[in-house]
Image 1 (tube, rainbow, N blue to C red):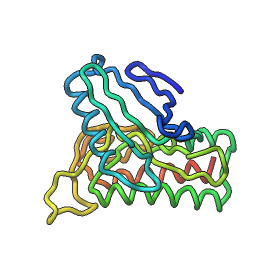
Image 2: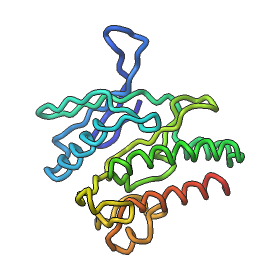
Image 3: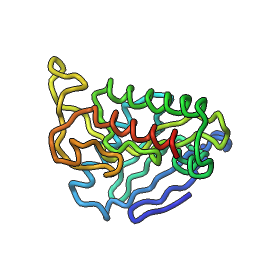
Image 4: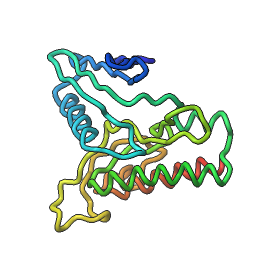
Length: 199
């Protein structure tokens, strides 16, 4: 399906039923530093705890000496940005439908006290090429759970300081190096909605 500097993504099939297809991501651990491996393992752990209709499911993971293999549900459609590029714009009904699914995904991870920190149209994948395909959030490489105590936690809580994500979608707090919380994802969602409705 594709490859990068550190991984290869291919299609795998169930031994029991050849009709069951999955996305298999094989990661070369030798190309990661210790800190990068820690980030990768954190991403895998977070994904393993998620279960939501609008988040790409991690089915299984295998951590071996030189490789890590991740089995994801197979997303047969393109990402939201690619669909938008082909269409130029979405009508009001489509925009509402897609944005509601985006909100559902982010609301779920926020209930889990997790910030995605790289929300953008390219991170939302369609389950198929059909017009009514389900939209799902992917790529949790920058995601992190707020470590504040439960009693003091809310969406206003500032948990993070790391500058990360994609600058044109990042909130002002992220870009200025100030402390920020889960609301950074809400800002990024707003930028996505402007892109969906105006372009």
